[in-house]
Image 1 (cartoon, rainbow, N blue to C red):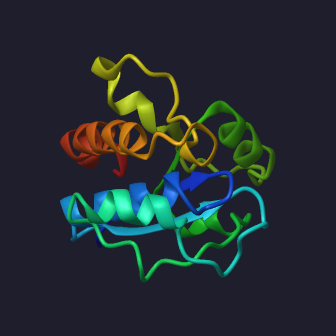
Image 2 (cartoon, helix red, strand yellow):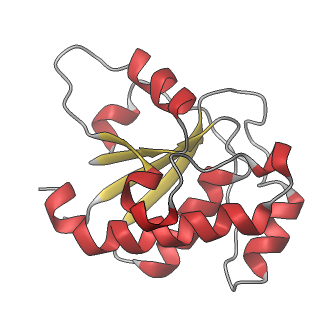
Length: 150
């Protein structure tokens, strides 16, 4: 069975859909999805400037739609990757007792980048910088994927 990875950010319109798009291009055999910890943008496509930045790199996000993270996601996915400590805290707050699905920061897989989180480009306006970090982390995840989902 192919591993299942969920990418999580705050609103599910910038970082997590970008991570999903990057990773599905890099590892099409992996089942991917993305979600936000907040419900503000449910049903909406990724933010236009993020779609444009991703498209410039050959990554199509147009088919994605925002959804909110749910408790059921702990059972649906083998690995949950979050973009920052706030996302980590919000996800862990919902963890069911006894569930052992790993939840990790995306940047844990790109130590050479020197970043402890993927900054939110909705606020920073640095869509390319966010994509650079996401692409570096995706390469790191791909390198250790078998050990993460065993």
